[in-house]
Length: 336
Image (cartoon, rainbow, N blue to C red; front, side, top):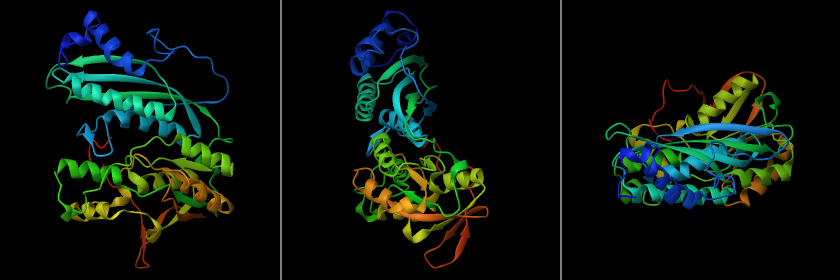
């Protein structure tokens, strides 16, 4: 291989074969992928979940992760939100001519590490190369198949009045980190010196939660649209009203500072390593205890409750009430 991606690397000939074998297969190698067939063949039974996602984050790397780690965690967490353990992933790479091979290796290594942590093989994939100036470096699309371990599978239809709403940790860290990198905010004056993305695979944490409390009425990972966006969506799907206490929602100080500086609402800022649980209120304390014992759930909190009615109402720190309304578009483009 050369030091940069060339158009020939995506044309299906010997150059493509070298790239696949020397880079992707060398790092993702597993029995499902190694035959390099057009499809991976696996033997599984039971209820399956299937999801897909595309990743166009800008910049490609940031404190706490990069596009490679994000691509694995995003798909693993979508499966976890469905109550599923990941079985296998696919990965498609759109590479821009001129991308440095050393940078690509770094992102592939990040993918491999995240997949190892989530205990899921990358079973198949594809590689294409677009001309210089047409791809912005690298785009990745991943798809995942998982085995559903929560029965019944979480669904907004299961949400009941009286349920408790729990978040597994501080919100808006991923989006705030990307903003800090884009705006080159490196001074302690903005309080972002320790800020990093929450990007993490959550399937093990969710499995422990399910083993501890049993039925989970609904789960969702608050990525694009943030916590506010997914609560509005779930309330609408369930036909219920959610009452959220602003004082209980964990937001770290560096995130608050960046949101204040740019006028962002942390409720609508993306997370990439958080899970929202809606459960029977009698199980809330046990869930908090279980999540808090896991490294990705140490700051889990109860943040609200479900009532009859519609919409999402935020009880502000001053005691006022604010009905949450989704923004017209994403406050931050290309966040994941």
